[in-house]
Every structure is written in structure tokens, then in C-alpha cells.
Length: 274
Image 1: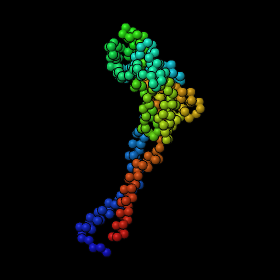
Image 2: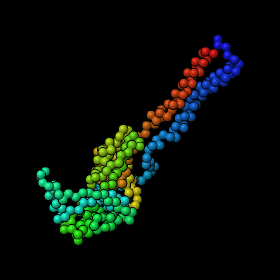
Image 3: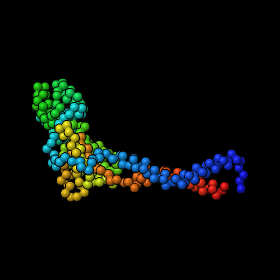
Image 4: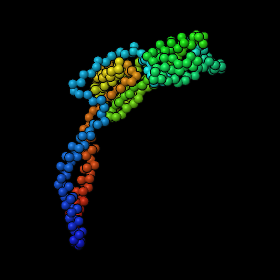
């Protein structure tokens, strides 16, 4: 038997007593840890709604809704003469033909007042116009300086956001083409994702200064009519993740279990030696 001084024996007894008490409190400690960890479960979930939440009715075919230019938008703008004949001349010319008349796109930003500073004609107000309306307007504005102007404009910052499973996984989808469907945007983002609940998809859209929330169920073939709904700039598409309570509880409690198991082993070793 190892002989220890009275002081060492007192410290050892205190240490073993503490471990013993922790061992006896193991299960209450785990219950407490579960209670604490449960407060943080699924905190990464977004856009939760109550059971009695009333969803708005989605517009299944919104392809006819044209985007209107907004303040702070970024635009590309090209101007050709002779109704764009030079642009066609270039695209249909052979490789040996001289490459003249190429219009270089520059980026223009719509200021907070809705104006854009264009070359030659200066500042013009275009906020609230569709792209086609803005092109027609600019062609008219450039008529006095150029022969039969042909304007080509594109909004560069149109985008939507798709959140899919696992929770917190988000993708920004550029809307380069008109008429992108909801299901196409979800596919670009990687689908519903692992453990994504495709029967509970929320689409959040700003309509007339109001946030509307639509519910889409893609778990059945009947939901395909909603999947073909066009995505609009600023849309938020949220594929609700399924709740993985068991997995999250184990992940949260595992560090506590490891600590208690280690202390139990230490207690067992010391109790056998002394």
C-alpha cells in the first residue's frame, strides 16, 4: 500500500469524493445538459410560421410580369446606329472581316433618385420603367445625336436567394434570363438538399411594398403547377429542413458524456489503488 502524508490523503479524499458525487449525479447531469441543449436546437431554421398562419395565393404564371428598374440597380447599356444593323453585320461577318462597330458594354448605376448618367445625353430618370420601356425611351433621347439609334439594356443585379437543407445552406441565383421557374432555381441551388422537406417550401416575395408568403408542395405531382411559377427578382425560396432532433441532441450531449465517462474511469482507477 502506498503511504501518503495526511495532507495528500486529505486532498485525495476530497478529489475522490468529488468524482464520486459527479458519478452519482451522472444521469441528473445529462438530463440537465439535455434541457440546456434543447434551448439551442434548430436555431438555424429560418422563416418559421405558426400553425394557423395564412399563406398568400401564388400567381402560377407570372411570366408576363416584367421587372421594373429600381434605384441602386446596375445596368449594362449598348447603343448602335442604323437600327442595330452594324451589330448584325458583325455577328454575321466572317472571321476575316474587319471587326468594326463593336459596342463595348459599360456598367451604369441607378442612383437613389432613380436617375442614370448616360453618355452624351446626360442624366435621365428611368426608375419604374421596364427594360423594354427604358430601351425605347433612350432610343428616342439619342435620336438627335445618332442616326436611328438602337439601344440594348440589361439589368445585371437581378437575383433570387434559395435556402435548402441542411439548414442555413443558401445560394444566390442570378436571374440572367426572364421566366426562370421555381423548380429551376431550386435545381440550380442543388435541389431540396439532404433532409429537405419538399412538401413545405416557402416563397417570400415583395408585392406592392408588402411581403407575401406562398406555400408550395412539391412532394406530389399536383405541385408541379406551382413549380412552374416564375421567379422574380428579390424572391426568397426556402426549402424547410426536416427536424433532426435525435442527431442534434446526441451532438450536443456527447461532450458532456465524454467528460463524465473520463471522470468515472479516473474514479474507478483510484478506488482500486487506494
